[in-house]
Image (cartoon, rainbow, N blue to C red):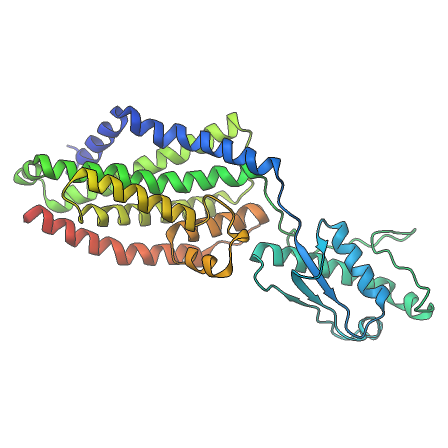
Length: 367
């Protein structure tokens, strides 16, 4: 005998699959939009990371060598941007084996860009350490230093983990559209379905049967999660086969982030479902809330290009937390650390919203 909650979840999923408009918006639209927006970003590659090198009391050729090394790494040395502050007497410190602290001041730049600059600066300092004794013996005003050239002895500098890379437009837009349409579907479609079922009395008839309210609510939640999981499989699968996008991420971490996000989105949708009595109002508000959260959370454009205040707003939204975690995983690759903070924030959001939503929905059922 099947569990009551699974019967209800299967019924909701059957209704969703029969709705052609729902299928289009859930499975086809994300692929199309990821291709369109991804192509737009690909035709206009991201601007290079802007860096300014502050030499302090060091000879000019030292700061110039560091600047050239950063430029060779695809960065742009300018008057503004991420500040690289070299310590005074850098060469003397390297020759004497003293501690060297090069400060990288992030400012308003994104974390990924700052980490990329830090990794590149460390590599420059490694090469300076190798060449420092010879540079001290040469006249400082005539010394030429090219950290990118090597003689018979080659120095290979590496850091812990690869420097973060800037992903392509389609690589970024596919998971962004996935996050957006998970939020859109589990909130809007199932939100309208709940309100319509209450209006027509279908929910009341189910409650009058031996089905318990908690089974009904559990079925509603499971239906949303299963539908979102279907979206993940289809969108990533089609994106890989049709668009050639193969995300180079730690898949366990990626799956945990998506699962935590799905729970939070479903909780918000259930909470909104308790606030409306007509499907028209529920649909309008669901669409607006989904689109606003997607835009502010970084699904429409990279958060790196928005002011710091808007990135702070994104940090309190489930879409922002999910995109922040996924962005780091795509930039760093399979070696990316587990996004514990992002997952914890999403779990806390769910723990706060879901019980409140369940209480309000129960009031609707018995009212």
